[in-house]
Length: 384
Image (cartoon, rainbow, N blue to C red; front, side):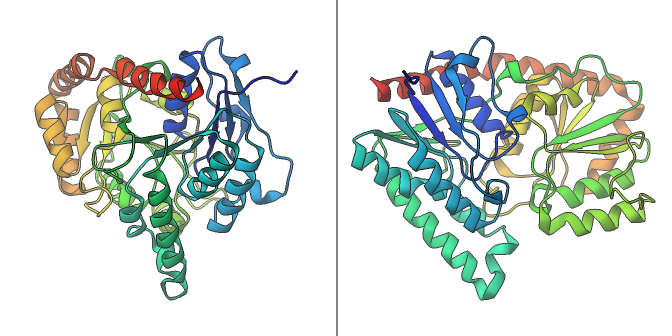
């Protein structure tokens, strides 16, 4: 007899290494649910928790190379096929293009319909260069599809959103599940490394501060930098040119591993956070785009939780968080950030004080266990 599946997670966009996918899945597994995941990516990057492997099923591909592609057509193709293959009592769509087919499938089969929205996707489209291609036709299609997805999401049996401002605000059953840290996935910074080191973990693109961070690295020759995450295709040429200007022109297109500037690529969350060991600073230099102006990057919570001082761009909610927690500083330019790095290099006692305040504030104010338990309890109700 085949295993009964409680929750089918449909992720046609975010791959198996996605941090939010890991956090949500681990919460469901801790609640005792049997979960299957449909997502692109490498099996080694899939979520796991201790003694939960028998309750987690990763559905491997049995079709063409569309499994690996990231373009919009490939995502549409995967979303439809994933939904058709799902066997859960409830289907949980966590990619926008999967929401409409999931709605149809669950209504036809009388299953429960759940949706997760990572971000304000309509605002996010304004940040994407590809949305303007072919006289804006691709962007128009994506925008229309997103509006349709939000219409269906409002009618879900459970809608989870990653922050308070993420639409739709008038859903039937809407639950805010913030991207609070799952500390079991993180590595504590611990004792500072002998040489000052700053890290960034997340998508690497201009709007998320990639260009600013590279300028900061250039202005701070006494610091080491670790960048963990995939570089957006639109920014790869900029990175290649910057690396070549820095003398890294060998065939791999990346600096050698013994360089003070290291690109690690996209890793599973537990592997990503291993670079935090010994680090001094976490960077969050997001631009003030429509998608980010109201946001709190999850990395701010994570930096505090592992005991890193944060340098953040002046997004309003980031300013409020850092000022209330005394966990870092605000810098409105790479030059301003470089001055802070120089100051902390020369005064390590100051950064040690900030690091200790960060971890203390996180311990007292970020009740991750409770928030994920509430989420899991609501998902359990869908399966009963």
